[in-house]
Image (tube, rainbow, N blue to C red; front, side, top):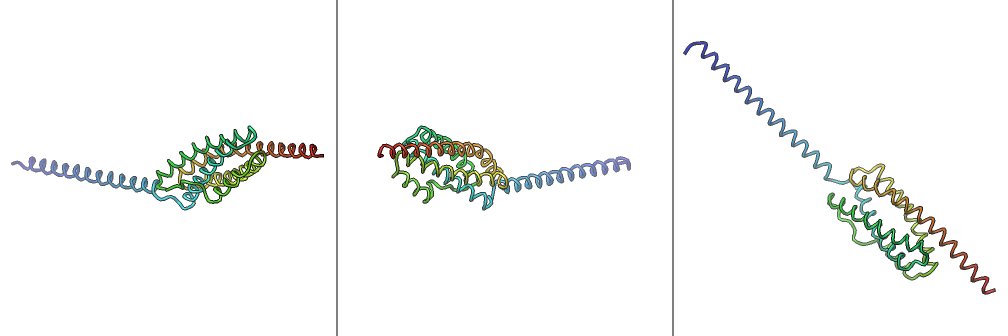
Length: 206
């Protein structure tokens, strides 16, 4: 075999080794990249901060209470405004509850399945009222509750860590703000109606 042929053979073998080494390096790089992506994805959908988890739990429990109390108002309310408001609570908060439950399941968060003891006590109290008295007490609580809810949802929307939970808070916030306006208007009308009713009763007695 000539010297020229030997040199050509060595050059070809060297080229093959370089190509093979490059393929291995590229494979390792791709594997590391995939591993990095997997780790990043795992951290994004893995642990949820304590603050975000607390928000989910409180929002879920509060949402259940709004639905229960809304059903009561739609049934027991004296004025049309209170009845309509109660039904709106049932419709809107049932939808929001389903959305939150879906997000919670993705995060492996077990949400409450019933209202808090405080809200249960409020329901019992309202169940014992009727007429204008029921309307007044229910709407007063709805104004207070929605002011508190808006503050909590606003905080989560601004400073939440989990993007999905934060997005839920942002999307739900306008609905809560609308509820507060409705509650304030209904509360004013029920207070005025109760005052008028008391004045009429007093005049009749005289």
